[in-house]
Length: 255
Image 1 (cartoon, rainbow, N blue to C red):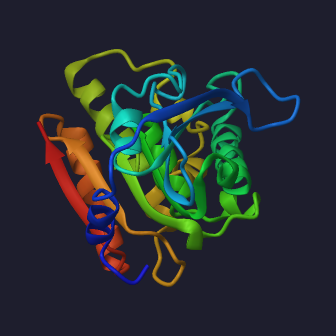
Image 2 (tube, one colour):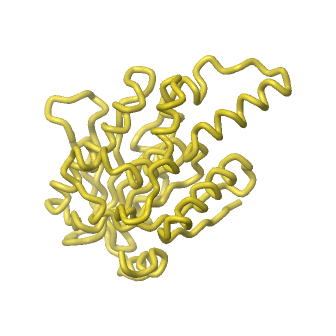
Image 3 (cartoon, rainbow, N blue to C red):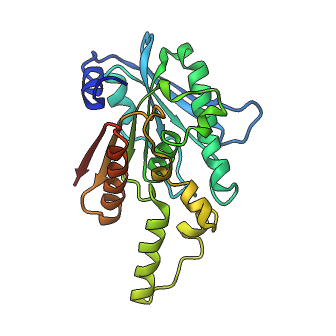
């Protein structure tokens, strides 16, 4: 992407407001799991509009594509097609399978979103909390999307919101040190376990591991809750790595 992400996003947000149509529970895997579904919100008579692909949070163990609050209305009024996806959850599947579910969903969107008024070559990827980690890993580790025949070229931006696991080993160290210092019990299914209980997997599932110059990684707009030191530190950490790789990044703390 040649221009700054924020400038491009600002231009997109200048598009006119329109009414919204909703298509729910579209399967993105033929004869798949009940959670292999997504919802599409589009302006009426949408055609060739940019796409916002949204990944819900919930600690990788809960949450639903319906938890979007006012986002669909906001984005469709600004001229986007908004997609919210479900995916299978821990512990029913492992983290690698979970990430591949989201990649499969995005692959389906790339293949079919034109039928719903979206431009398959202008996709933004975003998510909240656990969804922020999933968005960041999809936009930095190209293995998952390559499996779906999707290149980074179609991703025009990544918008992770309030994630705390862009650098998983660092997060595990901080959390477990705090538990030990204060004498709190260690969680039986905390980040260490969720990400495979294996140091190599902890590194591999971290977005910071995969950031590199020349990969075509899209620009990042990183939001975090300013009152949460953990998400602030993780956002700053990812921003530092992105800047070092000369990837456009904007960091924004919100109260």
